[in-house]
Image (cartoon, rainbow, N blue to C red; front, side, top):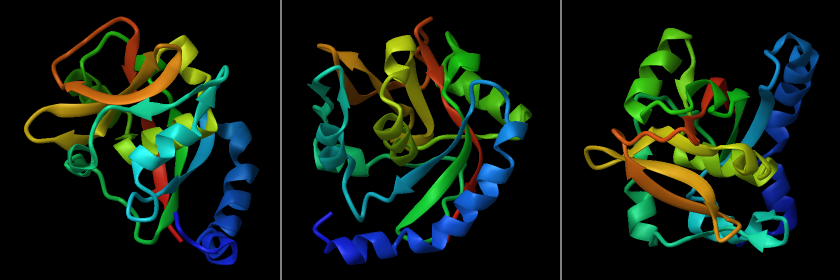
Length: 185
């Protein structure tokens, strides 16, 4: 991120109490849900710089998208908290929407009073839990590029890859991840 360690740590201080609160309610979450992930916004560290920091079974993550393409993915029907970092809470990794298109999955996600995750949130999820990609691949339908591009994370050559596909694509190995809420500083 090009920040001094003390400056970097400082942006997480306001989230510490929120994490304690989440930990108190962790037992109430559905089985298979991840309590939270820390999301660092792309103006702090760009996703194309985060991906090589992710490792799974000795293979580093990567993307073939250039920075302009990644920046073109904008939040879609979601509200992102202010600040440089925030928490995505109560993550469902996409297992409940396997085989559905991202467009179909958004309808299901919203009917459950949840929110589709964004590109930044998906990268955070895989940063914390890359093993998810061994089970299934993840659409991030809370971000869109142009009319119908949806960011995705999958294994390619054994390593985590950030790329994209169309909102009308479906495959039995792919699911759209969601969160129960977002908590800012």
